[in-house]
Amino acid sequence: MRLYLQAVRARTTSDMAVYQRDVESMVREWRAHNFFYLIHVFRSRTKDVDLELSQPWYRELFCRVVSFFYFW
Image (cartoon, rainbow, N blue to C red; front, side):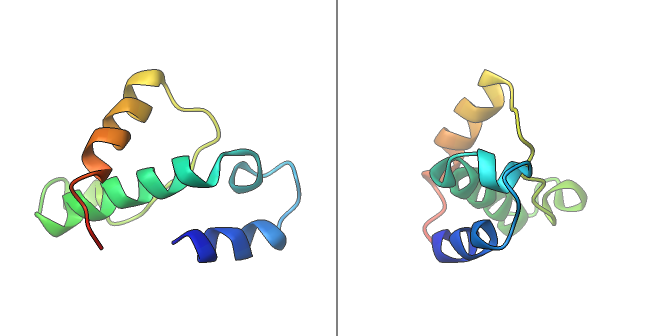
């Protein structure tokens, strides 16, 4: 995931969210989506990752906790 995000960052402009957000934050969000998709929870919403620029604090905290349980 990290290598992919770094490769995307290298090919984007600085005004895009993938360039402005911390790589670890995006990895945590991606892993949280993967975890819920894997256990068949909110599959219609977790099939895609929307790496938005600003996230509320509670969503960031939630991604930190949930991504811990995804070991891929």
